[in-house]
Amino acid sequence: MADRLEAKIQSGLTFLNLNAALTEPLQRYLSLLAKWNKPYNLTAVRQPLEMVSKHVMDSLSIASHLTPYQRICDVGTGAGLPGIPLALCFPEKNFVLLDSNGKKTRFLYQVRQQLQLDNVDIIESRAEEYQPKIRADAVVTRAFSDVQRMCKVTEHLLNSTGVWLAMKAQTIDTEIALLDSSIQLCEQVTLQVPGLDDVRQLAVLKRVERSK
Image (cartoon, rainbow, N blue to C red):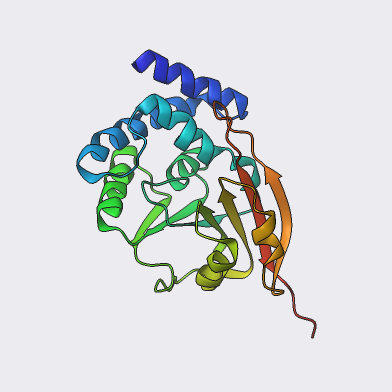
């Protein structure tokens, strides 16, 4: 199992053009996730091999879109997805992992300690109630409800030039069409996730600048 897991991670990293050195820490993360999943029910995906595609590579599929941003807030992070794989990928960036579920944040504290992720802050709070001291360059969400609501409840987390990176598991044309006029779609991308045939999309959004 360990050899198959390592091979699948390495194959995915090659596909995404990411550093093979991520293999070992990603294996350790998956080991922790599988262990804590039994008592804490962190994810419906039970098998580590299945977690590689559905969770880890899905998370890392947006890595190339994070280049411009230094401080990233992962809202509704759950078991640390996409925040933990991305924090491993970008040790020079700062990540805030936000979730209101105490079991999940306790798991994340364990992951941070075990993987020595000094670039990760963990916040147990609802997005609406969290008031950051430093606002983010980008808010990332994965399978958050609808895009309009996502923007509404997380807008205060972004700095004045910040963007939303909304990961979705289905086409989002209808949601985009219903966006408030204060929100602008910058980019809509179909993501390529190694080992996964399901549709994955990323919408990059920002506030519309008001004319003075």
